[in-house]
Length: 324
Image (cartoon, rainbow, N blue to C red; front, side, top):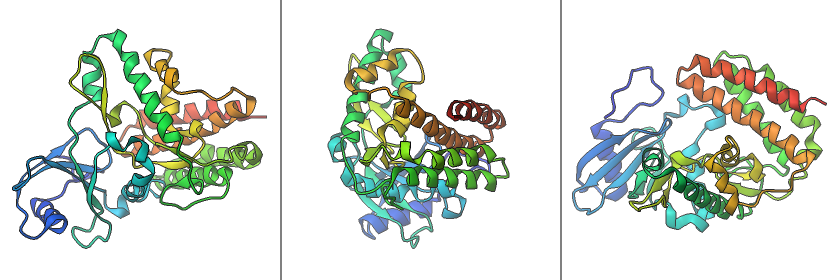
């Protein structure tokens, strides 16, 4: 296990928990030879499990206790589980779902077991390639994102629900949930409330988005694995638990692709950007406030006071751009 302070958000499970999960998933005679907790993620607790009768390891992911989850991040693992059939266009890059339990009867927390994907995490491996090959990585990321965004869904909002008939309703609900969570942390959420009011007043512009498309929610370098090849080649995509239905421009991936004027712009060699209009630009400012609100919560959870303060300055910039 990774040793963490008692007050840390991420808390591991016991040896007995791992054994109970393995037996619930694969039968009471299942033998767990080893379980190694993996770092890198900041939400679920993740383990590489070697079973006695298996040639390949499997991956166990355990959600935080329900009472420790923010409302705006509630049951992300269940949302990921519901997303699997919709992610069929990139199924060849994703781990297979082997077992899951959301009843709380085994260890009192949600968990899932997936196949183990070989490959090196992109944040560790990408820098080892020559700089002039990095655009290849981002071009592949653009292809993957385009394949996901091409999927059309039944409602706006999280895959597992609640669903909304209009995009404006989904955005306002999300902003309000994040604001509630921020206030629950005893932080000021007035700027996020103001953004929700602006979104409500501009509902017509938001509702120009009339087709709910599948959004990855969180796809970037940290969610990808690279193959042992001479140039960057994505061989795996992981942890798409924040998927939702909406405007592709609201996806975290699009925000990150535009964050710097560097090799990441190769993303748009394979991903067709929308026509730039005043309404598109306006909506991006609304989406950025939502991203910044979620980041404020994450930084608070990680104990980054400076990061929390930065979020207020950044939201102020976006609100000034939204002012009539």
